[in-house]
Image (tube, rainbow, N blue to C red; front, side, top):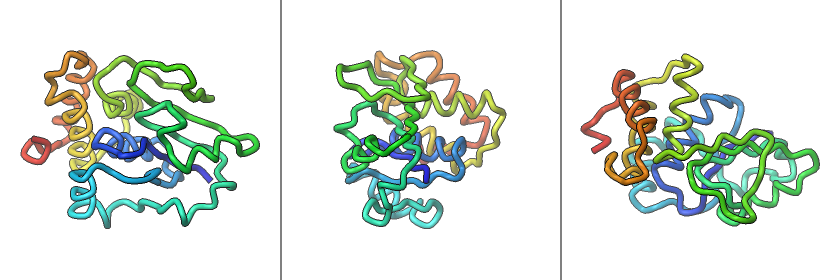
Length: 180
């Protein structure tokens, strides 16, 4: 079994990155490691609850996880109960993150780590490179991730890659009235 997750107290970048990662790993389950930020919980309950199949950790046999795809963090401490999967025999870990490295970070068989404003930027770039189709709804969700983590593209950590990703998402039908 393959599982896609993000950090505890998940934000829009974590959510967007999970959904984008599922485009790359279509057979993987989506599972939050714990709570989400209040505004994200409300967004999910109002708009995404029936569109994406988010699994509850208690319904996953963690001993059967063969691949863990972690987005928007490299810290095993920030993936809550899913950290036990790291001890599974033969576990494969794929990491996608934009945060600076820290001592004790997880390492993976695949590591896509870039100095950009959001992890959604990284995954959007990969989808674009692979010429993968995305819906306007997905473009909007990915745009929300970029918008939130870059402070509406104004934080000093914002890079040209963030703007390129945002422009591509607009071309794909991202709805600015929802993003803003």
